[in-house]
Image (cartoon, rainbow, N blue to C red; front, side):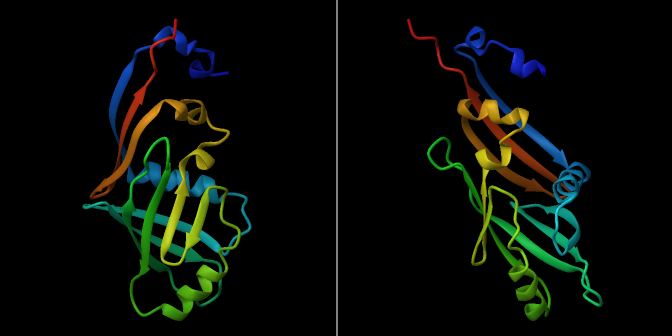
Length: 168
């Protein structure tokens, strides 16, 4: 296994870590492409374009003939509140006059990954469910704060971790 899984976290008791992690547009798009790989979905590609102000555009290309790429704008509506409410809530809207196509696309998204749920014009991302099975999952119990922010062409993750003092 990896370094984190072999690390006795009790040896780090009392640690507090704050990190600001910039994530490039290229890495975001690679992560999305990996998540789409092998899934049966009408979505062929997604190009994530972070914009300043906690928002980003996603240019979605579908496999339906004669349907142009659709641009969806996402705005961070609610940051996760660890540990009680680890949901990141995004509000989405389609740009341009593609309402009918947009409705059809959203209706076809019945096979969203675990941890992703549509609720009207909101996209709810359950951080623990999305992290399940990854090396990040074991660290979630130590997360005190996690926020997603954006700059032009970059997402920024603000993270605070704390490993409590050992009980005597």
